[in-house]
Amino acid sequence: MKEAGFQTVGIAHAKAIPKAQHQLKKWLSQGRNGTMHWMKKREEERGDLTQYFPEAKTVVSVGLNYFSGTSQRDIKSGFKFSNYAWGDDYHEVLKSKLFGVLKKIKDVDSSVKGIVCVDTSPVMEKVWAQQAGLGWQGKHTNLITRDYGSWIFLGEMILDIDLEVDAPFSEDLCGTCTACIDACPTQALNEYQIDSRKCISYLTIEHRGTFSIPDEQKLDQWIYGCDICQEVCPWNEKFGKSTNETSFYPREDILHWDREKWSSMDEDGFRKLFRKSAVKRTKYSGLKRNIKSNLKNK
Ligand code: B12
Ligand code: SF4
Ligand code: SF4
Image (cartoon, rainbow, N blue to C red):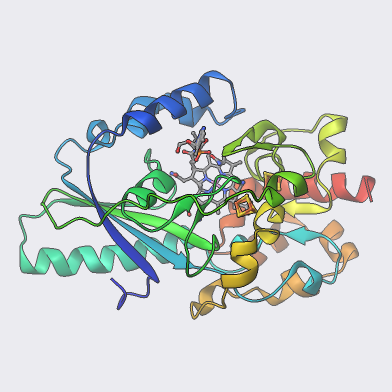
């Protein structure tokens, strides 16, 4: 797997994990998913992998470093733009690597059944990464690795064969730190839990339609996603290192466009700039809404 370009890999037994199942249920019942109704719709599968893929025996969990070494200060417009979306769409990048590995397995034994997941499948990826020994879920809720911090994307290959498994990551290395909770401008975090409805990442990417006035004030100049809780994390400060995956490096226009250029961007310009990019998720209308809201609240 490391040959395929992943920095971190681990293997876990595919089984229901009652604790995660219970926490997901509780989280959804508190409405912390906001309008992400797709999470509720497939709650049973998300909470229990064996309902999603009954033949599953093993989960191979991978992490790919996406930190490019660039910072929000390098964005000339003064808008902030989450670094996970500066380059090519990570779903495609990780999936193509994982499918490559699956093909090699099938070349050896064509009877093996496997599926590849990156973000959009009803799978609790951080829980599986912890089970496979990659790291722990920090108080900001992201999966942190000892070697790369939390600037890593997660993906899985679920297989119907038994493999030797790794020990789960059993430590919590956050200790007494609360930097992420203290820095979050919208108080979206309490320890190890997020309320999506307050999170700028949710508001600028997943939320559809207009904002209510208090929401607009909360965007804090972010026009796509938010990195604050990860930027302040000491594990990222110490262990974040630049990735070799050049497809994640920032597109020049994101760094160099001024506010005028962002404000006058039309749908065609949006399509061109965000070709093969994860930003398409918020759609042209969503990005325009975010830009307008931030201009109003400068
Ligand atoms: C829904 C979702 C979101 C939502 C909700 C975020 C969230 N934390 O759940 C929103 C839109 C807000 C979001 C934002 C972001 N996301 Co997102 N998101 C997801 C998605 C699709 C599902 C996550 C999920 O299942 N949430 C449900 C809840 C129940 O999970 P949870 O918060 O992890 O809950 C755990 C804790 O609450 C814990 N818990 C509860 N009580 C207690 C008590 C104690 C004591 C303890 C220890 C734990 C604990 O137990 C729960 C289960 O483990 C995953 C992909 C996937 N399929 O898994 C990507 C994913 C989590 N996102 C990702 C990323 C990159 C982001 C952003 C950084 C993007 C950005 N820069 O804007 C932000 C980060 C915001 C943040 N602080 O989390 C990456 C994270 C990679 C990593 N290293 O962890 C993922 C894994 C996608 C991927 N394939 O790489 N995201
Ligand atoms: S992504 Fe931003 S708004 Fe969301 S929890 Fe982290 S700091 Fe708060
Ligand atoms: S900022 Fe501190 S509390 Fe938050 S995830 Fe990082 S180490 Fe844990």
